[in-house]
Image (cartoon, rainbow, N blue to C red):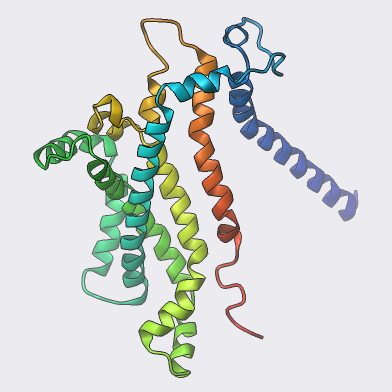
Length: 279
C-alpha cells in the first residue's frame, strides 16, 4: 500500500470518528428538544419515539407560567454582573503578572493554582455565615460576589496566557513611534486581547449560569430562585415528574447560553495577533 491510499484511508477514518463524536454530542440536545415538543403521554411511553409524531407547545407554556421570566431576569443579572466584574479584575491581574516583575509574583501564581484545587463545596458553610452576617442572603449582590470569587482564579489564569502570548515588542515599537507605555498598551495590546477576553467570558458565563449548589444555599426565597434552582422545582418526589415540561424548561434555560455564544463566537475564533505585524 503506497502513501496516497494510506493517507486517504486515515483521512476517511478521522472523518468517520468526527461524525460519530458529533452525533454523540448533538443527540442529547436533540432528544431534549424532541421531548419538549411531545405531549406528556408520549414522553412517558415505554417505547421511545425518536421523532415527535404530535408536536405541541403546551410544555413551553407550562414552563413559562411557572415563573420562568423572573428566574431568567435573576440569572441574567447575576451572571452578567459576575462575569463583567471578574473580567475587569482578571484583566488587570493578568497584565500585572505577564508584563511586570514584582516581589511574590510566583507566590501569587501558585496561590491561584491552589485556590482552583479547593472544592467550592468545602466553603459553603463559611460562605453562608459570612453572607448572613453581612445581610446578603437572598440578594443579587451576595450571590454575584460568590460567583466572582468562584470564576476569578480561572479567568486570571486563562487571561494570563493570552497576555503572555502577545509579543511585548509590539508595545515597544509603538513607544518608539511616540506612544506612551499606557497608550501603546491600550492601542496595540488591548485590541489583540479581544479573542482571549471573549473566550474567557464564555467559560466564566457558563460556569456562573449553571452553578447550582451556592444558589440553592444562598437564595432560599421562591422569588429569588435562579434558573438552575427553578428547574429543580419540576422534579418532585411526591408526584410523577412531567418529563416533557422538564425538557421544555431545560431548553429554555439553554437558549440564552446559545444566543450568547453565537454573538461572540466570531471574536473567539479570530486570531490573537492576526494582522498585527505587516510584512
